[in-house]
Image (cartoon, rainbow, N blue to C red; front, side):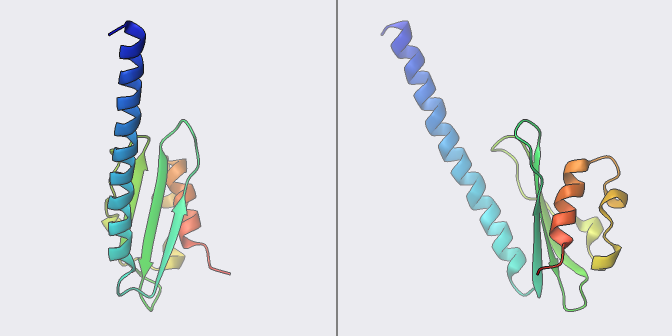
Length: 121
């Protein structure tokens, strides 16, 4: 095997592995999101942008009184990021969710939270 064909083989294996791990990550997120949507009045979703910095996806489930009943956050730059709950937000009213107070030093989380609590038009 020549060095060029070995390099091409490694690149192809890495590409296929990236696709499989990406699919696994999306499956994990979809399962967590489905659990969040069950038995909740409304769910708000927000996402921060950024190509070369960690992205944040946040989902908040509200009850009939617009209090956070359940939540999840997924942040990272790799396929190994997993959805985790944001338990410190549970029980808070939608009006009490002030992004720059809850996440004073994390602009990506501030952006995601702002979009998740934005009223639907």
